Length: 343
Image (cartoon, rainbow, N blue to C red; front, top):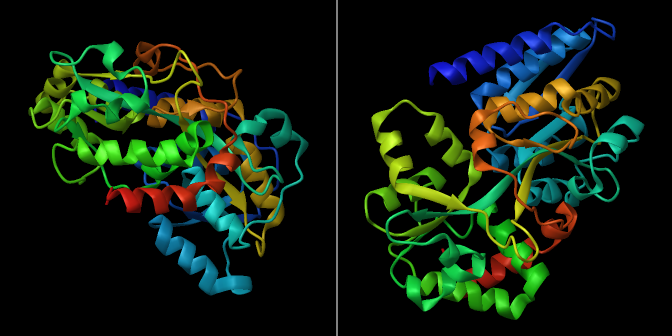
């Protein structure tokens, strides 16, 4: 962890803890979290210090927590489930795990784009799916659109993670929404034809592969690049010296963004505390922390972002597609990617 990052965490933690408690101190919240970011500790601490509500937390991978919730059913002690990606939120909603929330505060602060149509789940931060490229071999105008990655000029030059991963599935869903299933399938086939190697690893691995000369372009979430840019490790500095990122489709629909969010569970034993936690995640302090703690953008537009790494990326046009619209195309996205051989 860099010195600057450590100072940012301390500063935000202090800011969260200085808020005046608003509610009784004899309540609890049982949280199931698939967010695997250690930096969220200050976020949870801030909620307890602000509200007096103790958090009992269980962390795990999306699939294992999802299956646990289904298995526990009405006997589940969980009040809130938080995870990353609209696809995971919609899957939980489709399984009947969430209960719609009536909260004027959440409706006022969370834009409709970043929540379910019936308020069953809410997004609290968003991340952009960007194109990473070799600074010396690729010009920014060559990667102005996601569709460019399927062009013949990139044959043998593309690195990607698995087509089964939610980040790529949701991107595929956005392409289906904008261009139709037939064109999306052709795009996926083009990606497979252009692969420099079989899909493997995470987003950071794709950028490391570019720096190592294994490929020239890749897909990644923006915050993985921001982490590398904020790192003091020589190997990370080397990657950033060789790799840049582009925000695709700025001349058309805008760059695809996905969310991190959560919902109140149908059988939550502490529903009042659960709603308060959701409202807390939409507060100015918590929203600012998403930007400072994990280099994500807050969904509340009025919140000031004080993060040099995010500021260095500049402003960009985001795709306005509703997160629910993306989630509904995940099944089609998976089918088409499997058919194209994007494993």
